[in-house]
Amino acid sequence: MSLNFVGLGLHDERGLSLRGLEEARAAELVFIELYTSRLPALSLERLEQLIGKSVRVLKRSDLEEDSSETLKAMAGKRCVLLVPGDPLVNTTHTALRLEAERRGMKTGVVHAASITSAVAGATGLQSSKFGRTVSMPIPRDAPAVESPYLWIFENISKGLHTLVLLEMDLEANRYLTIAECITVLRSLEALYAKGIARPQSLAIGLARIGSEDFKVKADRLERLAHVDFGEPPHSIVFPSRLHFVEVDALKVFAHAPDDALEGYR
Amino acid sequence: MSLNFVGLGLHDERGLSLRGLEEARAAELVFIELYTSRLPALSLERLEQLIGKSVRVLKRSDLEEDSSETLKAMAGKRCVLLVPGDPLVNTTHTALRLEAERRGMKTGVVHAASITSAVAGATGLQSSKFGRTVSMPIPRDAPAVESPYLWIFENISKGLHTLVLLEMDLEANRYLTIAECITVLRSLEALYAKGIARPQSLAIGLARIGSEDFKVKADRLERLAHVDFGEPPHSIVFPSRLHFVEVDALKVFAHAPDDALEGYR
Image (cartoon, rainbow over all chains, first blue to last red; front, side):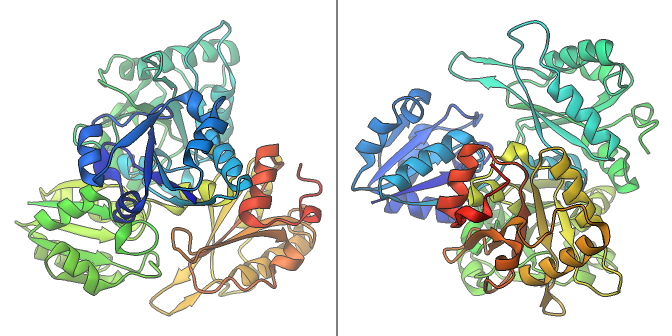
């Protein structure tokens, strides 16, 4: 009896690694959860064909409040849980894995691509220059949550870039867009005035990284707020001072106009 | 004419995603570089069988000093460059990609697993609590390079964990071990006395993450220095204060003894 967490990567069922596919094919029961992130082009039908067996979709409640029931259904079997991105980046997975171990199940992980490392390749920014990744929630109450703003400032003041992940509430079909995130950060700039979200501040918007129709665009916030990034997932990077290779990369891979790079070279 | 950077993930050729395999099969020329990291169990023969064509191994000089020659050999063809981990995390790849674009080649990326996100799943520590990742070089001169030590301190003082990647000089067949890294950090502790590398400081040693014979062990530095982690790649995590789920995870997944967790809860 075992529970193997297998990552699906960033885009569709082809983000599965060859080892992940082997594990899913060898499992007696295959589950999938699709609420912790969004795979823009996943087809459950193609995935089932690939694996050669049916895949049961688990909801948030199956992995959280009702995790005991879910683990009971898995007991005594060789099980795989397919998850978006790289497994166990989400705390829910870690809690479930701990509970499975407590019940005597052997657990394992098959890693896959994650936005937290893909952001370097997608933008051309140096991986080693990223500080803490932050998450921007969908605004539900006033005032806005200020910690992402303050972490961007903290990172920039240490010469580090910041990846900001934008919340997706997939069960409610609501997701934060890059434009909305800019509005929130601009309102926090008005309060805190740390100089990181001014109209001329440079940022890089990212959408659907890992897809064939991904979009990466670097520009001043005042212009980036008007760019249509299309379907989620969206994220946004606030860079610190740039190395000259990073300047070139933002021009070529993120179509940064010259005036947006002023003050960052 | 195109150059697609395709990630191989962490362990062997089965870290390739299904989309990466498709791209390699569709390419006219397939290259691989194996010097920026080590895939412990990669077989070039099995990889060539999988792709159905021969794969040319590029050395460091082919991608750096002689990159013009390499790009000339690629000109006019649909090419794939297979790389360990997630592509373009390494600056060499970004420079090559920029040069390819300058020559009019279309470039792309197929992402794969990277230690920078896999570390969360391997240890059970929260991904969102990691600060800047640092690299510890093989000691070549005295005094030791102090920046990794100072960054660990910087991260801990903000409540953040630090992943320390240990240098591998694969062309010289020399790699920094966890025990050697601890020795370097202990010597820096004697100089700077910031309290992050004392005998009783908690750290988590990681070896061959993504492999079936991976090893993850959390303990006090004084004991961790004597653990045999086997073959590289090695890395080490210096945690900040732990959430209770992280405490449980380190006990279950990293066999942390109780006394090593004192002061971190």
